[in-house]
Image (cartoon, rainbow, N blue to C red; front, side, top):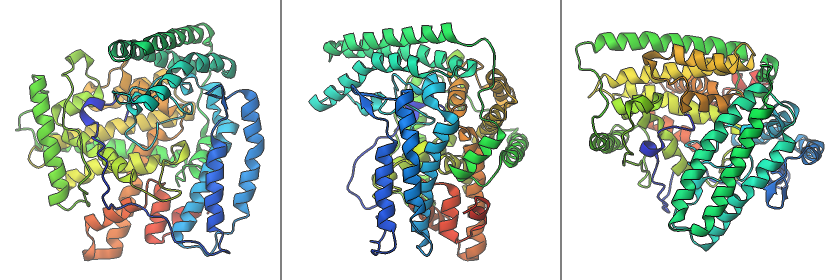
Length: 545
């Protein structure tokens, strides 16, 4: 979902609990000759190496620092190549592929993406809320200030860390000017929009700090001044020539194959997305025919009504998961059921329009938040934390998207059939965004054309052309090739695995068993999960493994 998603209605109460869960445990201890311990050591060393060096508390993305990192990367690649994974259990071979994918991701960053020298939005000054997925969508400066990491009141260590991050903003943006040497109109346009939003967020932060922490207000004001100054610099230096910023089809294919481990080329993804778009629009028409005699879905008239709807639907949704045996729901799993203020009609962007008509479809997508609670208890040495470079996108976004239609088929919306229409509108929007992603990186669409396409193709007219949803999405997809497609392509991969398992188990197939097994593998690429769960290696062969 967009960075400007419905954070007030879908945030999760992250309640710690020492409860046994379906989490990946550390794999068996490797024998001295099998090399798995060497892989774990290499993984830890690479993760440390991948982080940028700090200079005066600010991450160093200078040309010199990045050149030094790129020069040393082959050392780690050689160490990985020296580890012979043949004969390892499937789960350990999957871990090997994860480490290789992360190294390929860093290689691609240096060779093609170079966010530190091309992408102004990389230099994030402030994030108001945390992501619903394992890590921030798209490339972002290491250690960015995120307010959700600092819930008030702040204890002394938290306040010190908060102060340091806030104080670092002017220096970070000052260095960004020197680092951003590859100027592209489209990335500069996105940067200007981001800094406009950050300035407003910092102004709001200053007001919030005035009561409990007046000593931090000057730092917020300095950070805002630095953001405004940086935005002005972007406006003055934005190139006039609209040179496409996409990576091109050949590089898109390399990235999907070698980093995200998606076994479909750009051309195959175009075909898949177009077919899903057509299906979603067709099924929307069929649903509306079926429901034509039912009253339309209407937004709530008051904030109180919005609150009652959300509370009732969260309770119903969680109860449905348990009683219909969809997957194991441990006692610690919670979804927030407290709604935010009712937005005025002219401010309601796409996801608000959906949510105000019925919460349930987006509660299905909030599977993300339930997964974050499960993954917080994952102790696996490689899969126990977010994979770098959004390598988890086909799994996280694909599964959350697939889950909406899975729950439609499971009967979640039977008590209010018109909500089924929203599922297909959501899918159509994700197809529109996926196609925009694909056409941006093939350099067929400009940034403005990508936005126009998504607004036009999405049913309902609910996407605000200048709203934060579609522009926030583009600010993710342009610097992170394939993120927009991961919703639809990942959904297809989930459904393929579901079919594989149904064919394999026949009448013994149970959805709960399937999903529990699926979730236990962690947030890793779908191709690796399918290989590990079924032993089918056709996708891995397509990936050259």
